[in-house]
Image (cartoon, rainbow, N blue to C red; front, side, top):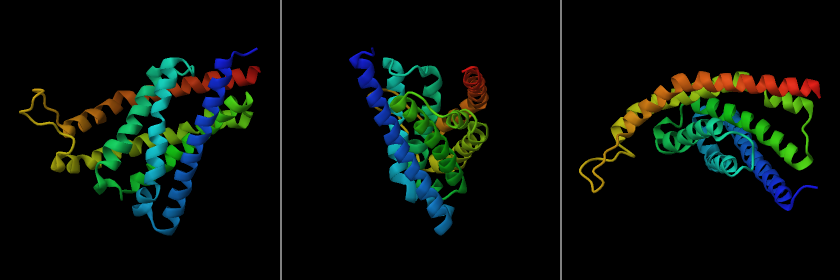
Length: 221
C-alpha cells in the first residue's frame, strides 16, 4: 500500500503537469492563431504572458529532482531548463528589439509542441499510472525534429540579440562598486553561445539513449 507521502506526491505532480500542459497549449494556440492572422512579427506579444509563466514553472522541475519527487537527474534537466529560462527572460523579455524575428515563432512552436507532449505524458502517468504506447512514442521521438529546430532558434536569437545587448549595457555590472566586481552581459551571452557547441550534441545523444531505453522497455512489456 502506497504511503501518504507517495499519494500526495502523485496528486501534486499530476496537478503540476496538467497545469503547465494547459499553459503550453495556450502558447501554441495563440502562436498559431497570431501567425495565421497577423504574421510572425506579432507572435511574441500574443504569447508573452503564458510563455513567461509556463517556462518559469519549469524551474520547479529542478526542485522536484533535488528533493526526490521525480527520478530525472538534475544534471540533465538543469542545463535544458536553464537555457530556456535564459532565452525567455534574459533575451526575449529583456530585449524587445528581437521579439519580431521569425526565429521567435519557430522557437515558440518547437518548445510548445515538445512540452505539450511531455507534460501530458507525465500527467497521464501520475494521474492514471500509465500512458498509451502512442503517447510514449511521441514523448521519445518528436525531439528528433523539434530539438534541432528549438536549439537552432535559441542560438540564432542569442546571436541576433548581441548588438542590442552590447548597445544597451543592460544587466551589466560596472566598476567601481562595493562588491569590487564587474560583469558584462554581452560577453556572458557569447559564453552562452559557446556552451551550446558541446552542450547541444551531448544533450541530443543523451535523449537518443533515453529513447532507445524507453522504447525497448515498452516492447518487452
